[in-house]
Length: 148
Image (cartoon, rainbow, N blue to C red; front, side):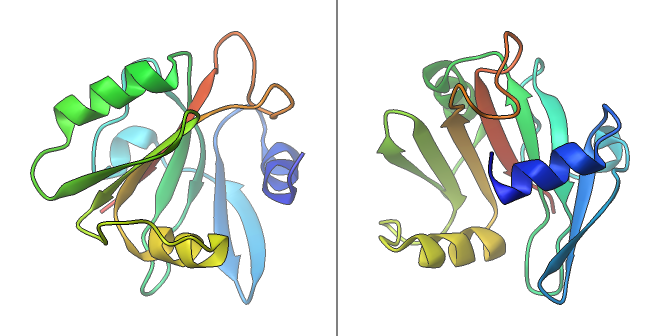
């Protein structure tokens, strides 16, 4: 289990977890209602909000949702929802990244990709590993969606 998953699990009371970064440390709190967050694209109807990382100065906020749908079904759903100005990047069979604007190709280095995602509106669709905290009969995939 990753450090971020451990934080979310430790701070969760069964509902979504709010993470705020302060001086390189993450603070756990309660998330506002998902309906009160202005998502860059609405999540697919069966998706459940798991956590929300509040945006800081110069960064975008992002929510992580669990979904029972496969990566390919979610890909079709978001291709139909995201309009002009969005670039689709197929990382591999288990991950697709949509960027609003952004470069024609994704950075190769993970830290550069992380920095790009912190500052660019995006939708990231990923297949969950079987040892993931969220993996169960209700969550086969995760979707990260930024807020405005």
